Image (tube, rainbow, N blue to C red; front, side, top):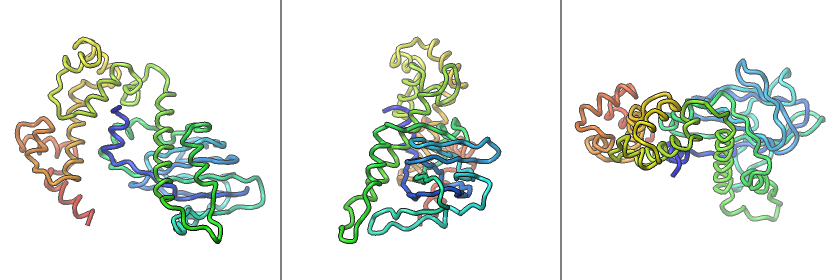
Length: 311
């Protein structure tokens, strides 16, 4: 499994379509900041403008998706200098499993777009989130995920139709596919010579090493063993990894093992001692010290707080 897929899996990445809207100019929608939910907007027809923070406005046309991975507040509209409608005022509960289309605006040129809500365990998505800008804009026109999404939203219930079986689950899977495709295209479009986790995914040797480390973090990796797996000598891999990633292999591996351990504490009832050994620590005390340094609370408190939130 590649490193991006493994991060998304462990971070419990999910996405769903929360709004299917058609707006005629003039119109503007405001989206509040969120620390728990990221937003994305996919234009199906027409075009609009989006602005987040102090960054210059971003023009969007049909087929383009704008993703705000850090949950920043933003505006979306035909023009951004008019009174804005709150996103919460537009969202409707699904009717018999079907997303209810929404209309707004005046009598000008139409734009149809969908808004996606995305969630993940942020501490496990950290390798990805730390490398993404405030706004990621990607062209999905022609991508299978875009075609499937537009096709699934093209049919609406008539008065005599039965509720579509599995339609809500299908929209969620399509939303996730569209986001994975958007991330993949963003990574593929990065200029050569960059540094960091995303640049590492694009590197022939570092990308393979990341896939191994992400997919099998509990294995007793050495730089020499990783080098044999990816086709480089020990010294060549160590140098290349540090150059591309900006840190040594084992600094990255240690942090990733702690992130996986944090997920195990949330998702399983396994003893802390067993999780500590899997993370590469000989004692629960050493593991607890390293865990607290990274997550600002010991493993036992991390687990208890997570259970209270679930209840």
